[in-house]
Image (cartoon, rainbow over all chains, first blue to last red; front, top):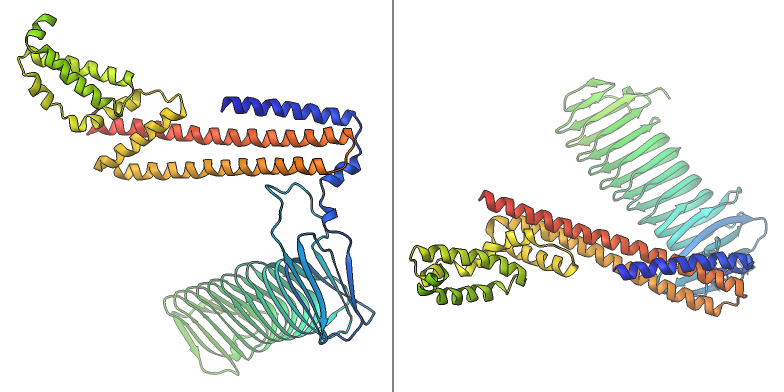
Length: 338
Length: 199
């Protein structure tokens, strides 16, 4: 071992001497930079333009940052780089544009010491402003984002992400179906008729949304819904919490979690149903007086407007419905001044 | 006294001592065997003076457990100057702990520690393998890249420096884990000695 350590120390000194010598000899730093970057494997940016009518754009990629934007023209632009190790197919058929990207295992041995091209994994999809197309995105790694300031108008949206962040905002859609397994989801300032979200691990944030029907299913993800207008919110979780605040829900809030807490602060809502096994519930409504209430905490405590009510509380008059049910948690219901 | 012992069966005493020696040699180094034999020689001499038969003395020495009898003390006195000696002590210690019922739980804990260290050391070897592969790939890339002389010297210098640094770092980490193996082994040797004395 001592011999190897001495040998390493020797080569280290030799390396330092060579670096010093190299600097003295006046190297071309652009060439040195080119050696330590991986730009040449990406080639030039490829631009695909589709002038024909398009009703659907499908993306199926192993690793891409899908960047959506709009322009004033009536054609679709898809721009990307193709790395040497990638297989990419772009096709147009039956009004559908399909982009498929597969990453082949790297032939590089050991660690990668070359810097990748900063925008090498970006996939730009530039759509006409009022395209109303369907969008299907299946992504393993990377992210999905909408960057233009104009509102993007879409029809049906389907997103399936393994480890790709979904960071969309500023758009209008009809039906949205989103599955996220191992990444964050953050969507804000958007409008949709129906949104169905299935998220497994990380947090989900829905901010300032205008949705008729929102359905969220989570495994361990915490879900935050902040501001926005809804007709109905349905949520189910195994161990994640629901934090719904500053929202206007005209019809129903129906949420449940096995072990997560449920926090809701809402406007007058026709029906509020909340259920947990061991989580706590905090509910703020405009006026508790308007609700018929059926509240039960089997092994916990019930408080209504900060008054202790024992383990259950029932009120049979009111125009709105409230059903809260937990086994081991506590329930607190309060009136708040909006 | 020697002449008297010979007359009282000194030859058979040496025969028994040789048997003990051959048994001990299976487990201990010649120096350690020599030290243990001093004890048995004195034991024979003392008891033969009390007119005990050498064969009877030998039978009472419990040859089946002679290794267990001397292991804790021998391990305590052993100098762990090389990895070979350290590994020998470690294997003997774990075997001993699993043979003595009251030490089995401690043997399990020690084994878990050793498994953890082994995994860490294997990880270090794997990183060394990756670093070597990276250096190999780096040198191939240098050969295929078109440089002037100054760039060649600088780029090779950077590669050699980083490779040596990474290798040195990994060797230091490996030495640290080997040190932990040594410390853990010696703590356990002390522990079984204290426990043995308490029993």
